[in-house]
Length: 261
Image (cartoon, rainbow, N blue to C red; front, side):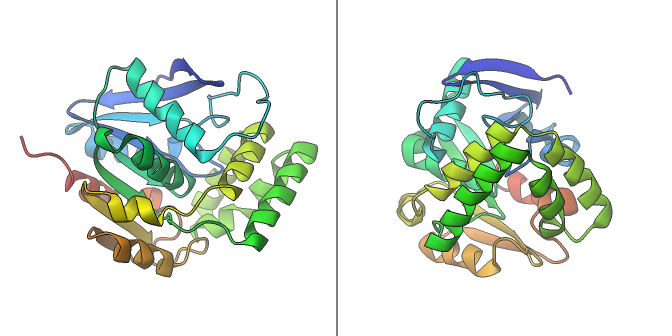
């Protein structure tokens, strides 16, 4: 799929665009890129104008220069808003996976009127506790010093129980830049809790959680449901990568938010 580019803020965002219909933005998680959503494209392209960006520092979206101060999840959300401006798109459905869900929630806070609906996949509204926050900073320093090998070795088995998918994910992680991985770790560490965003969110909300997710407990998904009158789909046999482990189910949930014509 051809990669397109748009210069926004401190990065040149790479993205793909395919299909036709309601605009749909798919935001990937850490430490990955847009390619995790590719299994959904053939299932959605007849109904949606699908935009899949690489978040700043990941995939083809290189940081143009080292920022003077660490960037925030809200900055990553602003990148997406500026990309939509560049594409002259006013309103979208948005789905965010894990870290991409944090970005989607920040987008909902700042640009709620631009959202037709929101899908949170293997994500959460909670902020990091002190231990988790400190651990992200330590890992960011190690990544900057030694590269992404440690992350590539440790993450795949947490992301999924599928050994073939684990091997693919390891290769994907090894392609990511240390600067992008470290920057995202610090941004995630500093993100605020998003409870108030969900409570005030009036558009349709869908929450998707793998029953076997080893990174974000299912209780975090249910907590989000209590904050909003959305709907939850728990997918048996899926871990932290349901868009790859159960693409058909994810596509069905997204299609359920398609505006009536």
